[in-house]
Length: 257
Length: 210
Image (cartoon, rainbow over all chains, first blue to last red; front, top):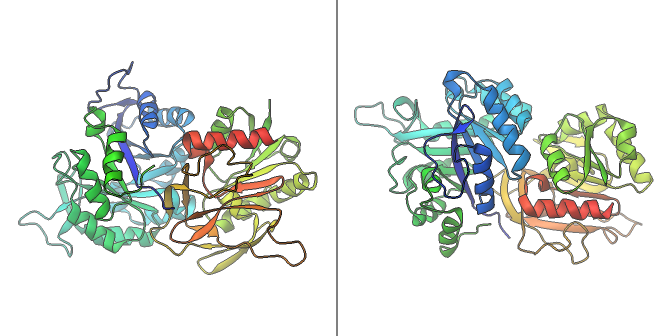
């Protein structure tokens, strides 16, 4: 009896539509987040993550509608992130039906946001999303060699990714979503060294993200210490199904649902 | 149609509970109204966050009295997550002890195994005569997210302890109570409303028992 390693598809949602290419056969409308959420639910996804990429344009209303529409029809946990800046943003997303809210850039600028959100809503619904990379040559060195980035991995902050994760745990986050900006999009596998470094430092659940290209990529991330694995494009393009990923993990002795 | 009230005392993802119960076939009302809550066929007490905050909210809303009224007439109540925890005698969080409703013996404490929160899909061990888990395979998984739980069910002198009560356990490094069926009072530490088909089946089982 042990908790199963979670497999989590991530959807980018822009003004109420799923973007960044989703290519499923049999869908009437591949841009409809609710329809996609239902498809992933049927395929055995353990949770869903929506990344709201609308944040910059300021139209958040449609996001709340999408979250409530999905929560009304999909009965597995839903995490929403992207552009969350204040405790009230968290509150509105939770009220719309999100189970967890992930914070990223705003928390780097104001770490106390994590503490406030955790106290007000409970640690279980506050996720810290960390976009991290190896410190590039000429960059300010960090203790772990990994640094937190902003702006989709293009801008270094000089903040040590491992120390940031530790601090976030102390501030009360219930989970850490670790996205390797070096591995992201390469399809060459997760950044195992980064997963190990963060795992060794924190006791909250760790979601590994970035780099999945093959069904055999997932088990090593779990063996490196991830409690959950997240991927986007390999699922969206039908390159891998959730079931195939779970089967490959099970073959490596990992407990899955 | 079975009428269920989800008790609105400022805690929990009420909407999820409402939608999942509707999906399972109930007519659902989310309210803090005592009369409605007492008269419904079933009452669901949700709850997330801290034990002490939940308990405060429940007392402020008079939810403890609603639960008492219902149980004195053997009218079913289902607690979910912290809505289960507050049914015990007390909760200890960060060294601070808070009193619970005290329907059940024992203390809700922080689990000792990492990672915490215990987050994700886990199995439970339910006895064959369970109401909530009837027809569910032992391999069935439910969605948990919590750092605290009741580990023990202390024997109470004179009432035979847990003899009449079904204790359903799960494990996260150590064994803890995942659900309790105690006559008309039942509760789950996990979230049936977030546990997909398995959770829906469990809620249907509960509705069928009302």
